[in-house]
Length: 314
Ligand code: NAP
Image (cartoon, rainbow, N blue to C red; front, top):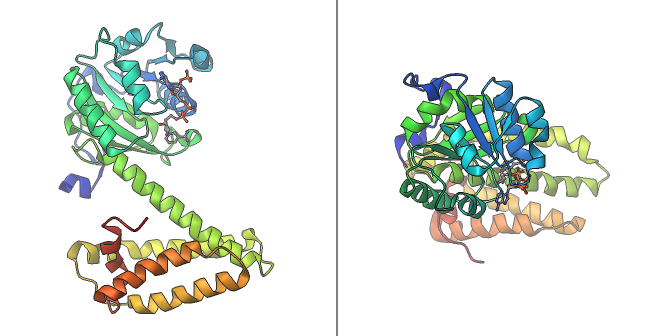
């Protein structure tokens, strides 16, 4: 990872972009793909005053946007020609390549920002493919639901050439909190899936506790504020634990892994006694046991990064 990747920069903290038509606050923009997310993206550009051209395979989905002032392009080629910047938001990368793959489609000189979800290999391959077609290319990931688009709550990640991000960030900022992660086109997808790991881990942990408490007649709403406090408290540990990982040194300043492993036994035992699913705590324990067997029992929890850093047993 580059330094840039380690410390993503919010566009608002970035150096001002060079003056150019594309950097104008009201620069024209095209949105291709008007599903739930694409319609929200186009709507945010319109509300921010950008002349917005839209195109969708099923053109009827453009009706509400056209009523709000969007221009519906008659073809994908016309959509690309209408603006120096085109946002792509389709189901997957195959759809992007299929749609833009026609030989007669002119991509030369345009800038594509692909906010379609996928993995880092797809992002890098699509960047190479777009480069061969003469397009400038940023990959991106939307870490938000459609109603949040256009508010600061919507985090939109970008990776690829910094100069291209700088040229268009005044336009992209209409979408929410936009960030450039680094030059490697794969970074936005990697951050995206890393965020999914966080989201599902927190939700699964909460569901585990909720399932246990419900056996004692405690409803989910009663437990939720307590669970939220625990999750926020654990989140506060991350910067210190990250320092241990980056230093490769895991002194047990608060608790040793073998102490955590004993607590995991309580969680497994209680889950089984209550008749709730114990698969998740058993997974925690299996990883901790392997690290302890490898001699790390006296070190602190983030030493488990070594378990996470290699393929596990399927
Ligand atoms: P969606 O409502 O299912 O829309 C999919 C879009 O892709 C539609 O515009 C569809 O066109 C188009 N499409 C699919 N295959 C195509 C093809 N072969 N050629 C041309 N167009 C094609 O999905 P969405 O919720 O907007 O999601 C779009 C992307 O945003 C996905 O990658 C998703 O993971 C990502 N995302 C979504 C959310 C969310 O909360 N919705 C959040 C973060 C990221 P038609 O209308 O003609 O079918």
